[in-house]
Length: 116
Image (cartoon, rainbow, N blue to C red; front, side, top):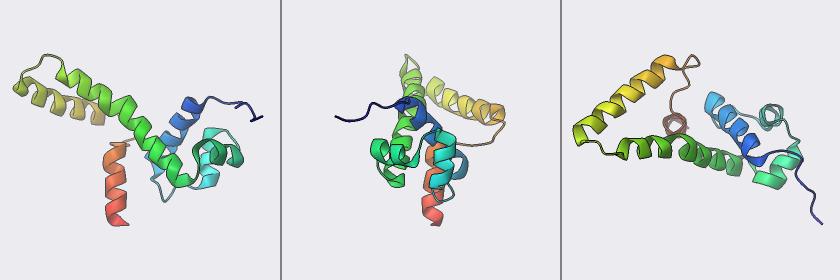
């Protein structure tokens, strides 16, 4: 009989996403993930697989939480001009209100992969 998880899978995935978002894939060690997610190394492997698999799931989580909702809001009865204006205004607002200056997780990932 498998062990019952003693942690919230979605919550720990959010924590992993924030760790990868802040540091990037290469700079985020398994030790960092253990500390940031608040679960043991074995639980990470058993739940998410290896570091790469966890990273991909983190990207999917970001897509679901942030980009898809933004695109849904964008599609709501707007003219093309209004939609384009909204995209730029939202990007500027997000950049100015983000004290951590973390940027877009997807763009950061693409830039890190391009450099590597």
